[in-house]
Amino acid sequence: MSQVLENSAVRPPLGRRVAARAAVGAARLIARLPPRRIRAVLHLLRRGAKPAEYADALRARQEVTAISTLCAGRYCLQRSLATALLCRLGGSWPTWCSGVRTSPFAAHAWVEAEGRCVGEPEDTTTYRALIRVPARSAAATPVCPR
Image 1 (cartoon, helix red, strand yellow):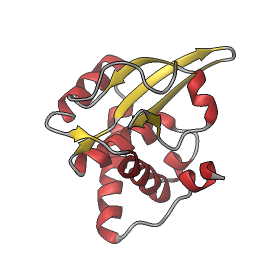
Image 2 (cartoon, helix red, strand yellow):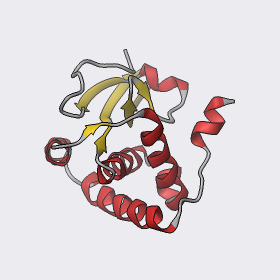
Image 3 (tube, one colour):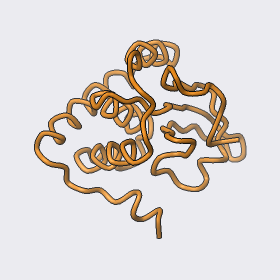
Image 4 (cartoon, helix red, strand yellow):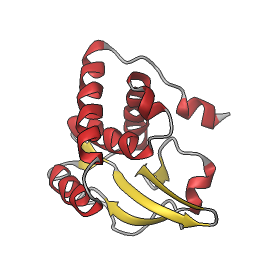
């Protein structure tokens, strides 16, 4: 039941829709970069941001999925980037992660806040994070997938 509430898309107010659209557009461009460049860009963007609270990161994810059908679907890289960017526009930064699992092989990108995966299905814990971009003051140790 809580998973349904966490993933429900709510139509944000006009100002937040504009910010969400900007985040989705920027995420689309960043997602085309090679992984090392994505990491470098995110390291620059996180500067000066406080760690995101779970509620703020969840609201950002819901707003991104409400305005973008691609982000609401299977495009986890663009969705996770847009969520992180929208949080950054609000002055905070979630931990952005990208990882893989081996059986069956799959890659996934997600965000974490307050030690939890934000709006992700239960099987996200089966992924091993290969790239993590936490807020500067956040711990660099893995918190969601083990």
